[in-house]
Image (cartoon, rainbow, N blue to C red; front, side, top):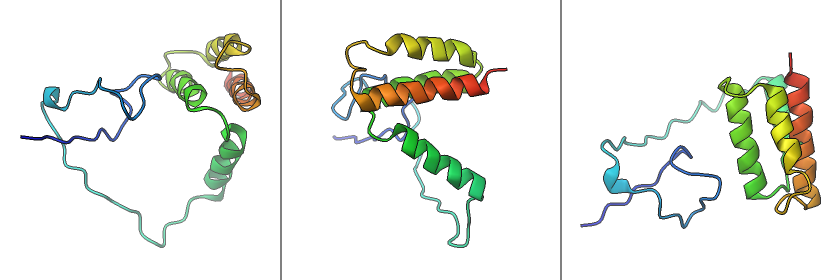
Length: 123
C-alpha cells in the first residue's frame, strides 16, 4: 500500500529541508485534510497599496538564496508572532552578514533590507 502526502505548508520543515527531505512522515499524521482549491473571483482586485507592497518586497528580496530567504522568514515570523521584537530580529540578521552562506551580494542585500525593514517597524 502506498500513501502519498504532500505538505502544503512549511510547518513540518526546517530551514535546511528541501524537496528530498525524509523528515516528514505521512504515516504519523493522524488527520489528513482534503485540499480543495479555492480561487478568488476573476473580478477580485488587490488594493493598490498591497500590490505595491508585494512588488517592493519582490524587488528587495529577489535573487537571495533559498537558505537566506528561509532564515529571514523564520525571523519575520517570530516578529509577527511577538516572539521577537523587531530590533532583536535585526540584530540576529546583522550577525549573519559576512558569515559563510551569506556572502553573495544578493544575500547580503536581502539581509540588509530585512534589517532596514525591522528598524522601520521598531517602536
